[in-house]
Length: 173
Image 1: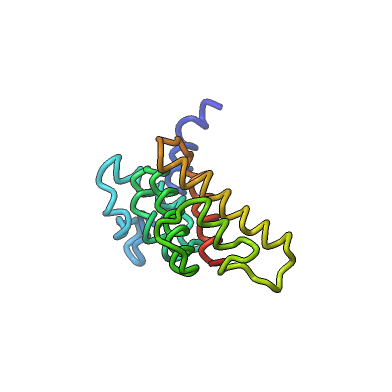
Image 2 (image 1 turned 60 degrees about the horizontal axis):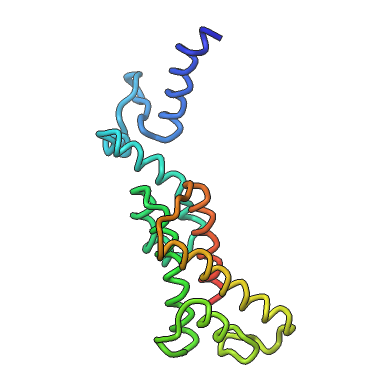
């Protein structure tokens, strides 16, 4: 165990640095040099932003969520990143449904996706239309409202999951 605390930890750290592409091997000379990515990390804050950025699931996210949330997420402002993503959902629903600008939040979702709503699909079962209205209303009520009205402590992984949910809702819209 004592040997693990020294050399093995250093080896694990070196393996992580290589895997993240912070250094790259010199082809003919041997040794390594800092990559362009590695040169961007000049402080502990830069390293924290880099690590948070690696948790941001941009490949899985709708472009509107990436644009609205990525900078906030990389700064560690997870509640604001989630708020921004769900705000995009609300804007998209309002724009697509054509409902009044004053209609917001859960009420907007229920009217847009309700049984006779402009975004309701009459070909679907009534219970499925209700479920979709509940999904949108619940997501907006729980995640946009809570993050918009108070500080909500979110772990990075939870915030990333919520951004994926907002992205899915945008794709439904």
